Amino acid sequence: TQTPITITLTGAGGQIGYAAMFRIAAGDMLGPEQPVALRLLEIPQGMRGAEGAAMELADCAFPLLAGVEVSDDPAVAFDGANVAMLIGSRPRTAGMERGDLLSANGAIFGPQGAAIAARAAADVRVIVVGNPANTNALIAQQHADGVPAERFTALTRLDHNRAMGLLAAESGVGVRDIDGVTIWGNHSATQYPDLSRATVSGAPALDAVDAAWARGAYIERVAKRGAEIIEVRGGSSVASAANAAIEHVRDWVLGTPGESWTSAAVVSRGEYGVPEGLVSSFPVRSRGGRWEVVEGLDIDAFSRERIDASVAELLAEREAVRELGLI
Ligand code: NAX
Image 1 (spheres, rainbow, N blue to C red):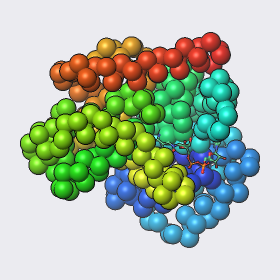
Image 2: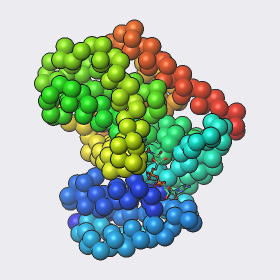
Image 3: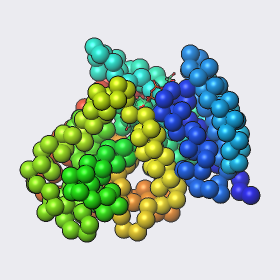
């Protein structure tokens, strides 16, 4: 039997945490042989929800589940964490100014970054789901002295999966026949779902679908898919978000298959002209437990403009959190 991997989930009393934890405990994230120990972090008002979920986990009698602890203290919840999934945040609500939004999240992600640096395992991998995810990841990373920057990532896999699903539907194929999709930039309305390298059944996607659609309505539909789900379902994306976070961690730890790539927001080293240090989405492969940005792709003028626009938003968010003294 293997040593359990410790996974910390924040916002564990909320919807995405609830959707994620049962699949993680069932082995969907780290495989059917790998025991997992869960540490659930909540704020005091979310503790009952997390405790109830922990009771249900016990009632599942998952053979791989090596233990569950619930806490409202980051120092306890991040203790020994190998994987930290930061789901709880303060998302934007109607009428909220950007400064208020960023300040509220700075108060969450700064201390959590520091607690990760102080308590987590040496190999800790962090994924931020809570919005604004890219900048929350930047804040956490900046407070995690001694933890390599590459261990901090933010979720754009949901956008990536949405982009795959919508392309497959338009082309009349299954998602297994889709490859080479990329999400660039911020997990926000400015994100750029890029089909210039995508293939449908091995042929260029831009030959399989209307090029005007690919560079117009498609981009908008992917970027606004969250709003579309809210309108139809009457609630935000939950199971699909949990699934994407699980796939992000799975691929990070276990690797991506072959030459295929996926999308993840990682700390830029200046690839594709994205300023160093920004947490921006790129085409990535996972090799030997590390994300590698896929380099050397040609970027045409249209793509350049879209990438630059989303990166400009990330830069503005970084400026704002600097001015607020949050990093
Ligand atoms: P919920 O409101 O259901 O759950 C959030 C939970 O986080 C609550 O139980 C709350 O008490 C807890 N929480 C708040 N501050 C905390 C802290 N400092 N420490 C620990 N727990 C804390 O939201 P849910 O639907 O689960 O969504 C969670 C986050 O994911 C939101 O910020 C949401 O905007 C974001 N999303 C990000 C996506 C992405 O692709 N990156 C897509 C889905 C989702 O919209």
